[in-house]
Image (tube, rainbow, N blue to C red; front, side, top):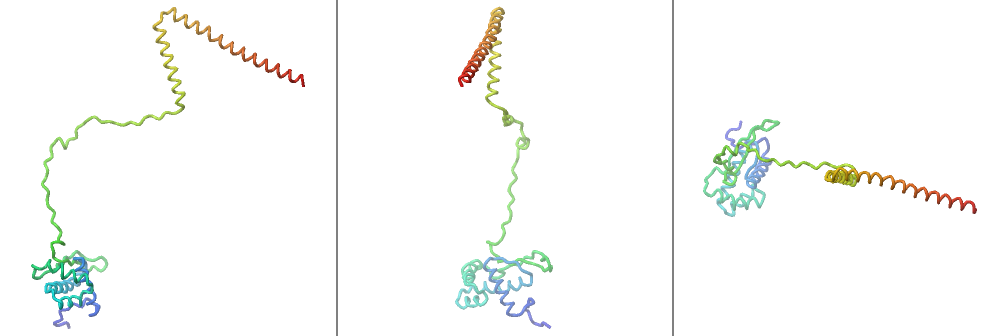
Length: 226
């Protein structure tokens, strides 16, 4: 029976338990917060409070006692320089345990062990005053909407389109000129245009036929000589 035995064995032997608690206290003093099970958290709190009490003495013997538990020189320096000043006005209760729920798998109750300092406390959210919003800002007002429509893509040859446009403009200009002229003069100009067009066509055909006949005669003469 465990009469007058206050030490919780935590399911491990003495050497294992001391090494585990030393490592957890080192992490707590280095980071300020660790997550572990509730039984281990209670043992870590007991050892951590003893280390902070030693730091308030700031003697060589206290430093050697801290080194027997904390095997990191930087953490010991931080304990005697920073945490000693943080807890100078506090006479106990240097750590707190906050339960965060059961662990998935074995359903062990988990908790957060952290040092009670202002730097680690979470700031409370402050409510901002509600701003008065006018009715004009809530109701959207209709206004001119500019829509950037893409230009249609032109297919085909641009040169052919330009020539067609120029021919249409010339026809329109010709009609406008004819409307301004009297009826007799307009008829006279149309007759002149009709008379000139076939003459020009026949003249070009005659010249081409003559050139073809001359080439044939030259070819026949060359063949006769050979």
